[in-house]
Length: 345
Image (cartoon, rainbow, N blue to C red; front, side, top):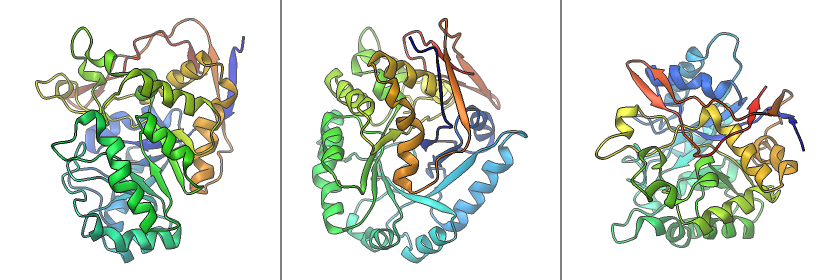
């Protein structure tokens, strides 16, 4: 039995760092293990211009504890007023690595997102021209569409038409949750990839709902049926090169999670690698673990693989953290509902 794994230092291809006291609290939890991360721009107000991204990057680097190394890969929040030339300039300077598309109202702080996709065609065409990836939150927001069906409908109604209308556009389907999404990315060309989260590989909607609602498992896109989770696990552990880890680690104050109308998101950063190693070992796929967490993402984004290494060791069940302090609040750490045995040395 394998007792240790030494891999290239991983990256997180979908991360929420927030701002202020929350940023200072959660950033070290990611930087402890991950060398880089695609940083989500859905602040209040959102990061919509190159100047916004530069200012946010400065705040992130200021919050990084002394002695830690970490590179935030900045993104812009696409709105119907996004200036294609601002996107071009920000990309040319090396400031941004991607642009994020939120359908308006789809998730946390997405009110400024896109309703009329024709209004962002100019920005998408510039991105295709310069090879800048589009990171997509793939859900429709129509009230008549069941929340468990919104990802599959988005692929048919929005994503596929965008890709057909914009040849050459690189697209990352973020935090995919369904068998339909897994099949779509596998059938796609080299310009289509997908990230998968910790919680969507470990849990299904029964874990969230049976025996009472567990608010710390509530996230968007919402957990789906078991057969969808199994399709995601099969994809992640298969060695397929265009899927990689995007934790979507999304911290909220504990009181906002344990509320009558709770916030969406799971804070997985402190234990993400331990969780993923557990999943891959259970499926006899530790030989594909490094590719999923360390190699596939850089290959798709055209970035170098880390020169650093990280070692995980297997032992007795871990004593998992439960909460971290964030200013006057706490943030509850994701509980996978099973013992974890892999720790980062």
